[in-house]
Image (cartoon, rainbow, N blue to C red; front, side, top):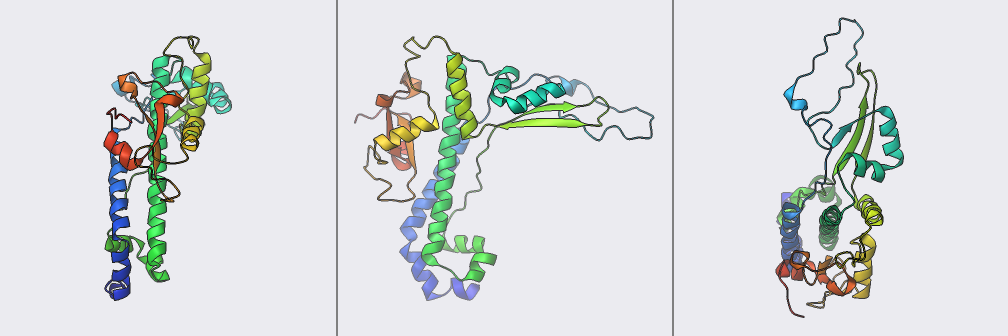
Length: 289
């Protein structure tokens, strides 16, 4: 292993892709920024809000153990309910998520869900881009099979790649039923991944009645809209003109030209495709095109 990493062949490959590795490491730091700035929680249930004020003790004298299933308290993301509610939630998750986890059909909550969806989507795409780049680095150098199998982490360290430990923190909401004696329990977890967030956005929008207001005249920030904007812009950054044709693993993001924080609306004419470098530089500023 040491002999391979000291070989002229490996060092030559390492030098040849040095700029690509530097770019990869910058992207890894950008992923960390997205994770630190993003808000990955939404709503919550109050069913166990005061559980910390008491302790639970099973004082039954029966020989048969009756506490095999213990309810999960002291978290706003678990709703304790009847067996029927658990089953209904597994059948209609979005409806019951809104009902029991305090997610209202208002413009304010809709904006919060869209913000969550944006954070999830950006982090998903960024993590995927990192993994693709790491695969490209391995393919470009093409180390021996035993290096790939037993020393993959060591290989990346010698190449100079900063491996990111970040994964996408999908919010999970759980409907939980535990019988009085703890003999049985059932759960219906709802994970807010990209598909579930899009369904939640569309459900909330359908319930909002004041779409004729100025604030309501906007598109829904869903996966479908992001894809449409990227297609419209030919998968090309509107600032630096780099495209997927130039960089196959390029991370492209959909950006508000006038930021939402400054009154910008989610409408196609206020959305543009930017590469991650330009979007990182722009941040929350308004740049004249």
